[in-house]
Image 1 (tube, one colour):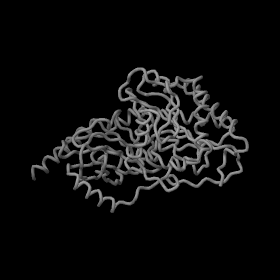
Image 2: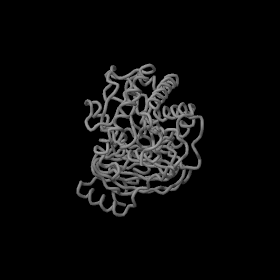
Image 3: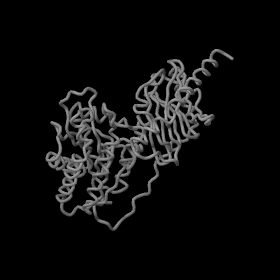
Length: 421
């Protein structure tokens, strides 16, 4: 046996022994946190480990049963993507936040009904040496094994070209086209940001933006539906990844009269002072450096989730020209002002509560759209409010009132639930 083979065997044995002690611990912790076991229809990922160095690195993920996988690389930034059938991730807290060897970090989550994804950020160009799943044996769980080896950029790009040629395009979310309805109530589309592998911002105590904004959007939907005045749709109702362009298409296909994207911000360095809600509208030029920084971060969501879907279809590609439609821009600005006026009675506002920036998710040319940053998860006071049901109730009530005011004061004769053909 060669020294290289011996080393690989020793590395695998080390993973096996470590796995015996930890297998199932994360799943038990998940049950304790949620009060319910994972859905047994899907394989459960219970632990993940990294080993190796800057020449060769191995990722091992413990699974409740075997499954098929597809592995491929992406460039700029360097990433490895594992596409899997739907998996219930019950990994230990902070799994994937740290790295080792060639791996800087990894993230995971649902990307569509029936499909999950693991995205691995690498510190250098890599080659996928092996990617396979071991069957469970002798009370040991099934194991996903990924071996990465260092390579140079030219070789990486050649391999990437070969992978791209061999790989089918990623499956996209299939949605039925919106049906014409005799219901004249305006359509409001709520867009909880992030989801799946894209966690959004993460508080120091571990709370994730994707979960907080989903809870808020669900509460707002319930509040709006109780009025009976609106048809309410959401871009996602669970923890899955929805590409930015798909969010725009959902709003347009539903002939939305209003689109509200919901997020929570964070600062890399908490200054203790910056806090409060902000309402953004779309603009070619950001109103300030913070707005530009936030828009750039949010627009990278597609890259974070593994596949950059930033190439828009023709209908929204030349968005700056489309947004010359004064009516849409004016309605967006009108709603932003109305919303800030209502929010100030229920929530702490940022010192500059209305801003504009080039958020890709606001680029529907014929749907008035705003992006609401509810607060800063990096600020302990804001985080406490974001996690408070009483605060959520007050703020959803104020947003609902802003929506009522907005539609009440729309230009006479404009049917808010329809677009002109």
